[in-house]
Image (cartoon, rainbow over all chains, first blue to last red):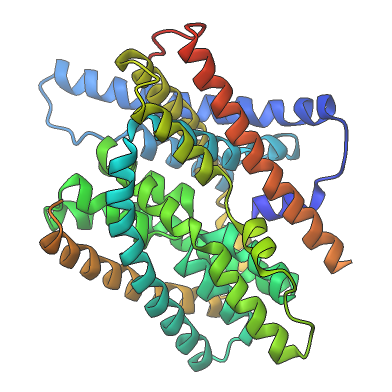
Length: 361
Length: 41
C-alpha cells in the first residue's frame, strides 16, 4: 500500500530534493533495524549470562515487530513515508549484492529446480485463485490481480498487471492489501512449520521463496529460519520474479481480447519492460564471483553489505503494515487471499518436499 | 489519467531496479578496489 501511494506521488522533482525528502525515513529504517539487532544481541547475552534457556529470536523478527508496533500505535508521520518507501530499493540492492555468495553453477542448478517448481506452482495457483474469485463473486479483474499477486511476486506483479489489464485503482488497492496482510502472516507461520517438519535450510528456503508472495516477506521468512535458508529463498523468489513478464503478457492479451481493445504490439519489448532488471544485476555479481574476481574476504564484505541492506528492508516491512488501513479494504478479498494462500502454501510445500526426494538438496 | 499513472509507475519501477543495480555494482567495485575493507556485521 505504502509503495503504491508513494509511486502515485512520484513527481519529476530534482534529485537533491528527493534525496533530502527520503533521509528522515531512511534514518527511521536504520534506527528500527539497529534496535532489532541490539535487542537480539542483548537478549542472547543476558540469557547466556544468567544461564536462561530462551529461544533465539533473530533481529529480523525484532525489526519487523518494532516497525509493526510503531505503525499501528503512534503511526508513521508523513515526513518519514518517502524514506520508508525506499525499503524496496534496499531489498533489490541487497539481492544483487547477495549474488556474490552464489557460484553461477549453483544458481543454474537451483534455478532450474526453482523454475520447474515455479511453473507448476504458477499454473495451480492461478487456476485455484481464479476459481475462488468466482465462488466469492469478486470482480474478474480483482480476481486476476489476486491470482497474479499470490502466484508471482506480490505488490510489483499487481502494479505491473494493473496497468496491463486496465484494472481500477480500488481493485489494485484491495489486492495489494490482501497480499501484504497475508505476507505478514507468512512471517509468523512458515518458520514454525518448517521447524516442525524438520526441514533443512535448502528445502525450507525453497519453500519460502516459492510459497511467500511478496519478495521482502519471502526473504524475511527465509532469514527468520537461518542465513542459509534466506540465501536459497532469495534465489527461488528471484526465479519467480523473472516470470512476471510472461504472466502479465498472458493476462494483458486475455483482457485486451475480452475488452475488445488493441492487443499488445511488440511482445518482446513488453516482456523486457516488465522483466525485473535487478535479476540481471544478481546474475552479473554471481558471474563475477564465479570468475574469482573477489577474494574470500571481499565476498564476506559483499555478503555483509547485503545484510545491512536487508536490515533496512525488514524494518520497512514492519513500518508499512497498518492493520487499520487494511481493515478498510473489506474482508472478502482477504478471505479469498487467505484461502488461496493456505492452499498455495500447501501445494508449494508438497512440491518442494517432493523435489527434495528427487533432487539431492 | 489512468494511463499517466500507469506510465509513472512503470517509469519508477524501472529506475528503481536501475538504481539498485548501479549502487550494488558501485559497492562491489569499491570492495574489489579495496576502498571498502572488512565490512562487518
